[in-house]
Image (spheres, rainbow, N blue to C red):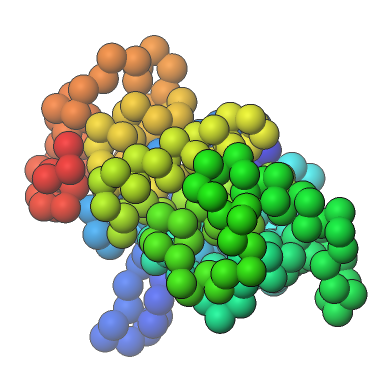
Length: 265
């Protein structure tokens, strides 16, 4: 499915600001894997997502998706295969455009349709059907500008945009972190339903250790640009937050001291 081979990325090489963001990252995901990723700020989580989605290229190593070599593929071309949600609810959408227009742009990009031919009746019906499944009443607000929606509604629309045409990989970059707890739970439930229904291979960054253990089938922990823990199967079953913190201490030889993570256990 998705294979990362010895990925390295250093920012500002040869300067006083040089920083090795990813260090020899190798990872293989099977079809349908739902991987949760945790780690303190600066561990390399978002850099890893930026590398997979094509925001910038790796210094060395390769990224293979099925039989497709993504290593040097431009970001807009990878969008055909990779969906992504960000922490900021407005990222990934055009706030001044309507829900319908945003969905149409996403559909054209991922389905390979040409721009400029308008939105067909069939496409409008598809958008309405997909929105209705969110149970947020957005199917009756398709002419509303996305910038006028609440944060949770925007994230739900972005999720629909990312999965209108089922992606090979879905990247969730703390996509509920900016929402209030109730809305976050709603968006997360919708996410789980969509991922399960379409059997989408998913990677989700979270600062909530308990969620990292409860969701999906595999948990990865990053530190200082490396993957230091990759837990799945029987090893992951029944693991507690304290168990994971102890494993982190054993592997990294230090105590996890990131308040944002520790306060969301």
